[in-house]
Length: 93
Image 1: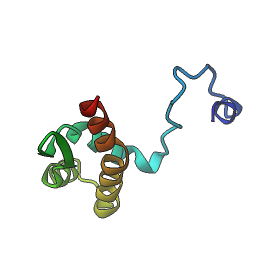
Image 2: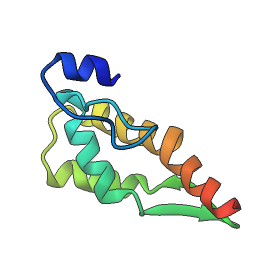
Image 3: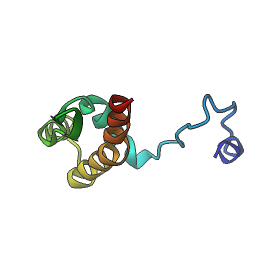
Image 4: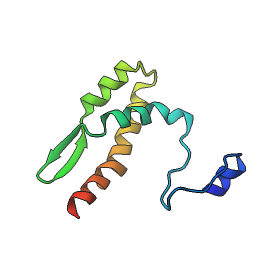
C-alpha cells in the first residue's frame, strides 16, 4: 500500500501497521458524515448494534449530498463492517 502511495508522489512512512489506504474522492462525503454520526449508536445489552439511521439522513440533508442513497449505503457499510465490531471488541476486553 505505501509503495504505491509513494509512487504517486506522497512521501513518508506509514504511521502504524494497520493504516488505511488513501480515501477516494467519491467517498469524502460518506467519511465526513461517518465522523459526525459515529457515536449516534443503537445499543443492546452490553454492545452496539447499529448507528442511528436518522442521524445519517439528517446529515445527508444538512450537507445537501447529491447521491443520497449511495452515500447512506457507504456510511452504513463502514459502520457495520468496521466501526461496530471495533467498538464491541473493545467492550469485550
